[in-house]
Image (cartoon, rainbow, N blue to C red):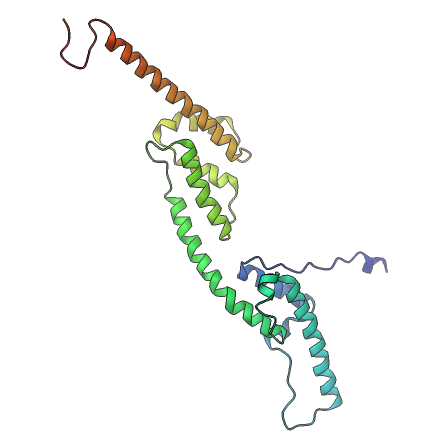
Length: 230
């Protein structure tokens, strides 16, 4: 039928190391297949010492078949390095419980590390004497660590942080950038380039002033570092 041919099967969520997010997606996926109960309760076992009826035997066999399908979905969701650690798990529930035990704790550690990185990012500011390139490197290192630990951080957040935390001698160029650019579409590279140009101009101006001072000091009647000449 036309309606059935256009139906798109949901993709199996790939485990990316962020267990809490992946488990939520995977639970929804298994529910859509009506297999969620197998990772919660497992396969129902026949009562010991009691002969099962044909209906009960058929039910257990159906659950075993569904369990195999669920295991297949879980195998497709994880990469080989993880798969090799759970090959001896017999049921989908065994695999699910093993993943939860292994990675939910890791998620808590990552969450704690992310909180520490957020605090570090909040108090970050440019140091006196620090170059633009060095400050960008420091800021991007922290921002990238936050992203690795699950922070959804766009470039605009980094740009706004840098503009707010430059030392006073950059106030003029920061105001100019904010007035003449749409921060939402400004790239980090463009911002760094603008600040580098300003830094180079300030350095050149400082060198020219120093050269002029040396020239004046060398002229007759100029200050020579000792007693003045009269």
